[in-house]
Image (tube, rainbow, N blue to C red; front, side):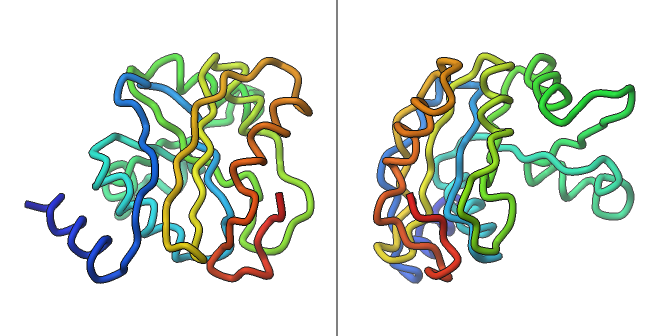
Length: 183
């Protein structure tokens, strides 16, 4: 029932579509979601997750997961990030992949909703260290579509892999177009 409501709102009221999918057999991956120019991206992600029927996750500092919002954030796919013990973010998140059976991590490589000219590369190194594919996901407000690309297994050659991944975002327009990363 809830899935049908999400579909009706997303497809009929909002007039959006989803192009592509994530194979349900891919239990662990890093989803490279962009452009990230607006808070509207959050609910697009929620609608996409519910319509596809796949568990999708995000990480946040562990302090976010205390009472009263902790239960809600966990329900929404959140995973607390504990960086005690000297671990950096890449190592901490790679450790989450090791202990979870299913972990599809959504990351906005722009790192902000403001205009950027270079992407942060932490998502790449997380996928490389956790030995999981990267799946490009575009929120294209110009076409009103969530476009899910093909998984890429990181080779260790950042420049070559980023060239392949960035092609997925050519011509994609964020909610606030002038803030979007140009691939």
